Length: 149
Image (tube, rainbow, N blue to C red; front, top):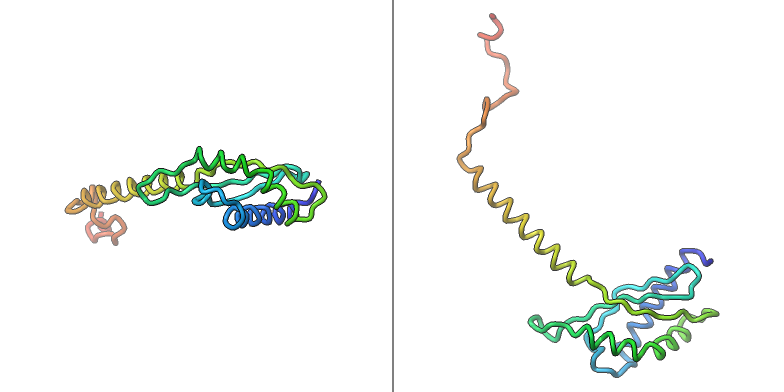
């Protein structure tokens, strides 16, 4: 087993090599909007998982995940060769491509934040003009009447 620091460095290098190859060397038009987000490698340095996301042509267009997955599958051998040449490890790891759900998670978090803002605004709206249920200042000094009794 390799140490964890070496595995992290190798995974980072694999992500850089794959991203560079997708941008400059692989000429498949389906890979034009593919972004490599992360890479992980097993402890024995034999299997690497590359996480990617696909962006749409514009904000309204849906991304083509199926086309990108097919293009990455067809380019797997070339990318593995590039990784082997670029890393110099004894055994070139196999590559597995997994779509990263980063944009979906970000959208979900944005929705949650918007709902929290709406709930805060509703609480602030209800709090305007509200009176305290008990004494206005429960930590006030004792009155003289209370001291005499």
